[in-house]
Amino acid sequence: MLLQKETVDLFDNADMGAILAQVRPEVCVVYGVATEVCVLLAARGLRQRGCETWVVQDAIQGLEPESARRALEEMQALGARLVFTAETVAAVKARRAESRAA
Image (cartoon, rainbow, N blue to C red; front, side, top):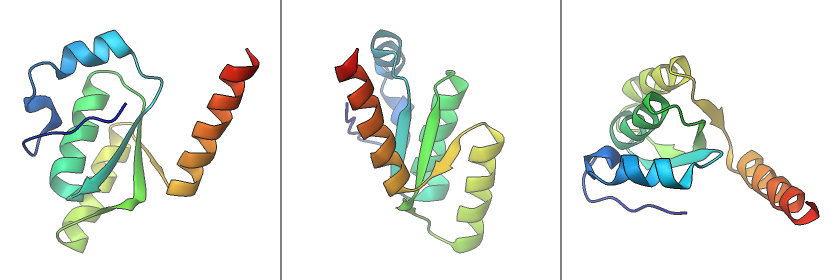
């Protein structure tokens, strides 16, 4: 599922909590700009709601290198996993193969 947002914080959408509760995603993959604003807010909100969260390092861009680095450190401290696109694609393919075999 791909969610589009209208503000910097994904959770400004009042329906987001209900969507997560209904869908119950195994993993939430976060990417985009800016690392220290939108990406951080999404990862923080997902982790606060107990979602396994992957942040795709080669699919994000910060405004400033130092603030982006600090944002990544915060996301990791919150329990988000920093990954790369290739790793994410491989994981999705593996999960699809597992679900087809089941």
